[in-house]
Length: 147
Image (cartoon, rainbow, N blue to C red; front, side, top):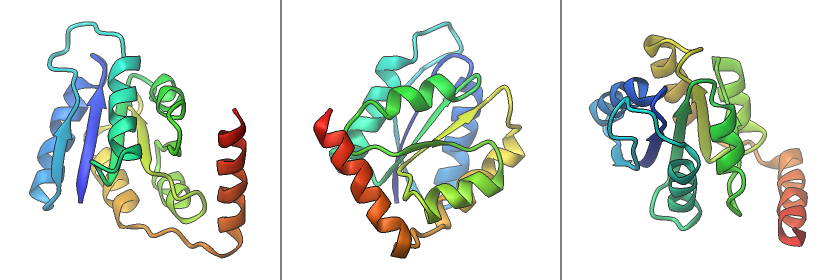
């Protein structure tokens, strides 16, 4: 799977760790920055990751920051993106099963590297259930189209 990934300064260290983890587990990684732990504004980076997923140049995306909240909000501004803030295994699994989330947001000040590895593994392996959830995604798409 090709994964677009991006972080701000607070998420930089976790991003570099996750790139190694993703590559070691056979994934291709498209790094959208940041390139250091120097302070940087996150919105352009998160939008870039989300656009890669929306345009189909990446299968899924991961956005990282201090809390992951602003990163998730930014990614969700791009049409076709369903970014989910998942700082535990349960929400990671449900974000895929019920919402077909295509971008994962995490907070580097909240999630330790070992847990982040587990979250990413579960999130990437979990399939969308469809069924009763599919009409809800269609409703979300309709709302997005009206914006």
